[in-house]
Length: 315
Picture 1: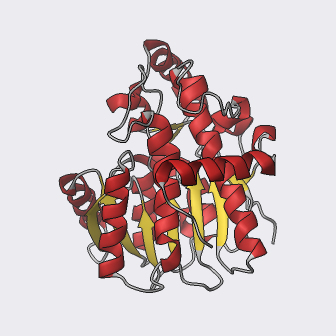
Picture 2: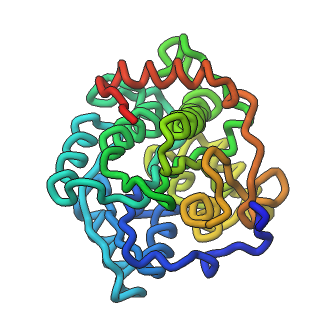
């Protein structure tokens, strides 16, 4: 079967009964749509959010449509390394041993107008979009069931086409530009992480797959609310281009869903929309940007992430 299925949509998701899924950022946007569709197919969803109220609200919304959905709320703030450790500790107590079939690193922030530091002293976009997911994946990796079909999915962004890794300015210390430096670099870091994770899993002979995806130009609250709303020029561009080049969150979730559960998805591959400039459309395999293809950069970034988080990622 081709890696691309021209009309692949949520109806194509295989049955997920008996599978346990952890999805970050599932209380809104693409993460919410991903959680809803997997719950519809019978998956058990662990749904953390930055507050228990947000997690429970998302669960209530899903259960209104899918009363039989198996959903568990929890608290996780990826901008805080302490919160990541607390969530991982809670998960280990509640679900000891190999207990995860699918981990989807979806949560993120975008284009914070001014450089902000987290409680750990990290630039907020780099912390939330990359360091948090890296630490979470490292801590939950021992819980991945070592069998075919288990996957780790990392959601990147189409802006990685123009991104580059500046190891002398990883956190905007020398120069901070909200979108085309801080955000794009954090999402390039995600893609480098996914590819290095794939390489390491392959070397170890692990049956766990590592895939990555981007949603194209999907209209979610990442662009329209909160600290990720960005400067006025970004909001103006969104309003002008939206009717022609964008898609809603449900369609934007399809590449993530494909990377997560499609039988034809391959470890190490990158998935995005098949339309013009990968802005919208059905999922397909998309080219990996040149800046993400250097394994030396990936190894250097991995080492830096271990240093900053204080976590040794053992596979």
